[in-house]
Image 1: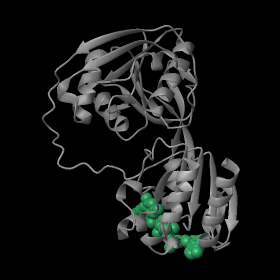
Image 2: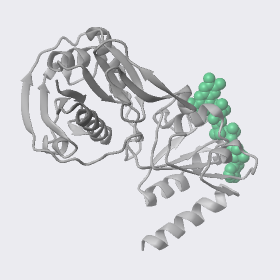
Image 3: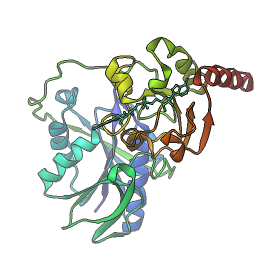
Length: 315
Ligand SMILES: Cc1cc2nc3c(=O)[nH]c(=O)nc-3n(C[C@H](O)[C@H](O)[C@H](O)COP(=O)(O)OP(=O)(O)OC[C@H]3O[C@@H](n4cnc5c(N)ncnc54)[C@H](O)[C@@H]3O)c2cc1C
């Protein structure tokens, strides 16, 4: 039976996390000697972009009622079209809330935050992140059906072009439990969870009036901006930028932390970034222990100089 994968889109456009999940599902399908069927809700992107990562079939759910997100309604929609024993989700905010709903509906096992291809399919066993990324474990699913979420950037967006076909399913799932009262849009140009590079700053910036230099550095790097929790709590930056245990968990290729001490709760949301650069005036700041590169010095001197240097290199 085919391996199914939920291909998440935002306003119809597929997310990078969707491509990674499809590539991961393809690796599972190859182990099983089977094919991948991707499922998406109201996409506007063409299905070809999913064939590129290994989806042989794409089921496009068309449902006006699903224009606003509800984990329960989306789980219901996915359950109406996914009739396989393995269903993969990206570990995004939305998808990681659909997956447990679907597991309950189907009576399937749920394994979250997988970081490698499964060690076996029967029983399904896979390495997953645990303790907020501080450790890992090997989880084994009970029973035949399993829903697995893939930790973002753990597997990678691997191309695996197949010829594919598309099927449109018109559904009208009840979506009455959730009413969107307000919607806070991230102020940055880039989606923080999708960004390859993130420039993040903390209380060391002293006040919101000093964020111009952080935004300028982010701008020249093509990066999204983020911040520590106290910074968003005081209102220096919007809550959408807060990363960490109680904020967004991100894993960009490059995370630049400016004036952030590196408390364990902050690290919990960023420590799976590929490369971490820490800029801090205190050589004893705990963040340096997790850094790939560290600069001890005053951010107010280093950031403008770094920005100018990058501009010069780019020019
Ligand atoms: C239950 C719980 C959940 C939490 N969740 C989160 C979370 O999700 N995310 C999060 O971030 N925090 C979280 N926290 C808070 C966390 O414990 C820390 O208090 C917080 O991360 C500290 O923020 P900070 O590094 O910006 O500030 P500080 O700890 O005040 O650090 C400021 C840093 O800036 C440096 N600095 C000062 N001046 C300069 C300069 N001129 N140039 C360069 N560096 C300078 C200092 O040396 C210092 O290291 C949580 C706490 C609890 C209890």
